[in-house]
Amino acid sequence: MTHRFPDAKQTTLGLALSALVLLVGGCKAGEARSAGYIDKADMVADPSLPFQRSWVKPGFDKTHYTKLYVAPVNVSYMLQETEWQKGMRKDDFEKDVAKLAVFTQDALKNAFRDDPKHRMQVLDTLAPDRDALVLEVAIIEVVPSNVALNALGYAPFGVGLALTSVRMIAKDTSTCAFEARVRDASTNETVMKFADREAEQVAVVSVRGLTWYSHAESIITQWSDQFVKIANGKPGETVKPADTFTLKPW
Image (cartoon, helix red, strand yellow):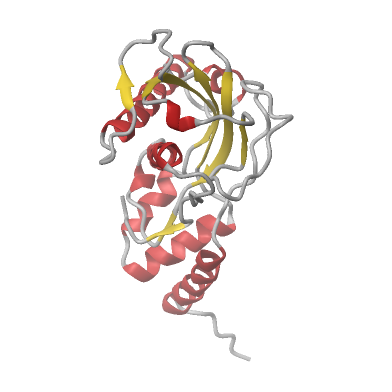
């Protein structure tokens, strides 16, 4: 009796079809374990906001504020708790984490500065200004993508899609999580809190995955745009989370 094994094309097609099913289902990440940067006890899942947990001080009126100071990003929780550094030299890991902190702060500042509405003036220094808010963010987790496997995504369309399927089935997706608070610059009172954990956007072929931290940077850029939309949003207006699928390879 002769046994027939599926050829490469059949295997690729099967994996590609699996990928399409998974792409439709999306890859929303579960919530991250609380790092303690903010108190999450009073935070809830608000369907009008793009983040998994949020809290807004009752009666808070964001329209009163026209200025924003973005504080240096806290990455100390990553240095303490993440498993990202496995297989890496400590000094290299710390340098990479420091770079990610700078990238995050710059991404937030640039998102507000590039906002066509220009509702919030971005401040370079912190001062007790009654018209200013302070945005403080802690990146608490980054799980990098598998560079070696993603590199194979440069193969033709079907193979790239098949590899996307393999990565998703194996749960080889990059994730990033943050905790943040917004304070009144004049009183130091916390008026808003947010927490979120996102997985990379699923792409048929991903160029971003060719570096360890590119997916994290993409997620952080999405968060920055969402913070701008929250600042500009009218009462009751919904700010949607990022799509789980993208056709962009970068």
